[in-house]
Image (cartoon, rainbow, N blue to C red):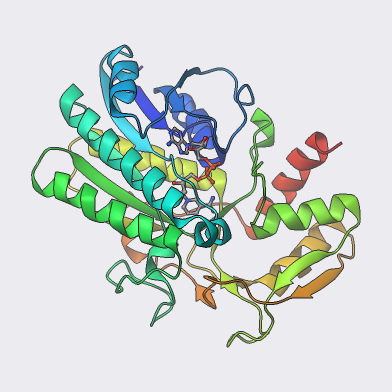
Length: 328
Ligand SMILES: NC(=O)c1ccc[n+]([C@@H]2O[C@H](COP(=O)([O-])OP(=O)(O)OC[C@H]3O[C@@H](n4cnc5c(N)ncnc54)[C@H](O)[C@@H]3O)[C@@H](O)[C@H]2O)c1
């Protein structure tokens, strides 16, 4: 890799994009962020060039990126990503997530940006027929949000087939944790994810919600494959380096640990890590929450020659360290 190659992070002001920005910088890249601050705070991320643009506006996106200089690759993190919200305002999800994707693809072609990494999701699998889930599993999302990830994959695959872009979809499972060294963690509003809510409950001594306890799993709660956000960021660095080096890659990779933990197991782990009892409030299951999502990571391990290093306890510990310094 040439040092100081510019990589544009669309939606890079958010939780995963911000973490990736630090990891890319450590690897010698120059991350440039483009964001509309719709689901993240302006000014929260520091130390990078951050440009404001609405990605659903093609002309604005193109004119902003044109000024950046030669761009080696784009990583497309920008999306509205709350499953429950996507049932309430599906039109906004379809518009925001798909128009931003087609605009970024078109701008990349126009500006000759060769490499395009896309933040996809295990939400594309809906309720999977087999677990762990291989990349070849059939796609059937359980929410409008999941639909947008399937549709974005389809449209970007077409650009790839037409040899206009080198596209790689990274299908994230459940990112969690923080990067306390950089004072960076998950700060969504509203927060729908388990680990941040669990830590907030522990800090405030309030019960955490358990959505559904009648799933067909050993303890009745949902099973998810949690991956530390710093490991996830490292996967981006590896994948990008390989694409830029001209390595042949499969079109899509699951990115997880290949290990399932139920919601109740996560709560028990948090109690051990924090040395604190956490109260649980049982609530009805949420629409769009499949019983089990665990990645088959065979292809990821083989292609990237890599496995995530951090444990569920590390995710809980790091979120706690970061969040307890931010919550007033
Ligand atoms: N967090 C997860 O659990 C998870 C799991 C699987 C996949 N993903 C995907 O990873 C990506 C990043 O997720 P995250 O948790 O960091 O989300 P986030 O909400 O923290 O970050 C998304 C960023 O994109 C920006 N954005 C959204 N629409 C935009 C637009 N039209 N123009 C410009 N900027 C826009 C937001 O302001 C925000 O900074 C998303 O594509 C999401 O679907 C996330």
